[in-house]
Figure 1: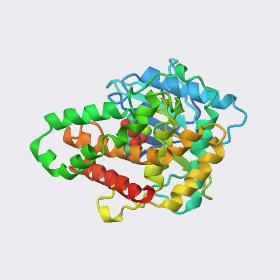
Figure 2 (figure 1 turned 180 degrees about the vertical axis):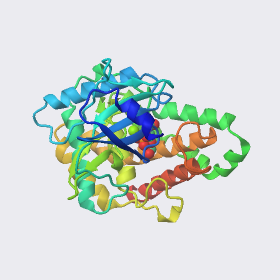
Figure 3 (figure 1 turned 120 degrees about the vertical axis):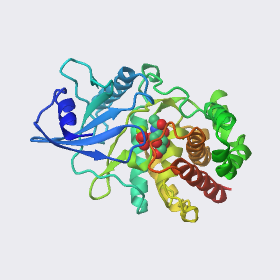
Figure 4 (figure 1 turned 135 degrees about the vertical axis):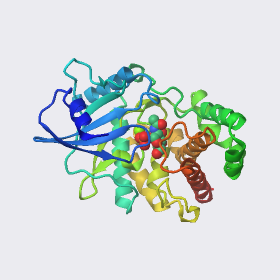
Length: 346
Ligand code: GN1
Ligand code: MG
């Protein structure tokens, strides 16, 4: 998007500084994100994908409530996201094309990691997400809108997959055959966490639901600075967040790697992440929740593989892709990682 348009959008928000420049960040799969440079400060301007997030007012309401809660907590040790209102009041702007925008603070001196480089980073990531969840423990989950209903619910993702299998093109199905087979074979095992939740054995908490490595900001010394991307904060189970971190933090490649032989599960990183995570959450989680963490790693990696595969069969309707078989590559990558995890855990 050109700079002139971005300037116009930015000027609808109440904040300091005169717009000088905007650069796109390309890592997210859903929203469009820009760093805005002004005479004063940097900001993060985001075009929110309203096909994925159909109710933007509710989305922003969730994020503001979380910000308010964490601001009030004296013990919150990470940098906070702040959201800026528009001149007409709401914390989002609807532009002339019907697109929705929000503006956030930029956290100075921060960087994002694509891949874990050493185990201290894994430990820091575990501490950061553990801390975030612990600080939300006294937040009333019923105050949050379920922004994407059934987001990590396996039965819902299986239903979408079954539908895609029924309607998908023959060619795509043939290309994806081995991965479809792996999904079918693991169906029951990967359903276990959801069943335990439904039986009341695992409790509901407020969870982040997108705890990948790139949703942590690090400082130059690799200390975690902030947990970002609060789009999917909703009621959930702790396993969603633990598992989603492990799949990105303990893989030897990114989820875009097409060369499957390069994908391994790094058990040292896993242990370090878990130590950091439990340092923050030991007194909050039950023994049963802790016992199920290895299954969480496999289940959430699997659900990502399943979602990429479903999107591939659907003709790439959901995730942004950079080339035609991108979603198939991502699905193969994640399902390979599940296998590598299984070898280690069993
Ligand atoms: C999407 O847009 P991004 O990168 O924050 C997705 C997550 C997936 C992730 C895979 C709302 O997150 O669930 O884990 O891609 N978010 C949504 O990298 O579907
Ligand atoms: Mg996200």
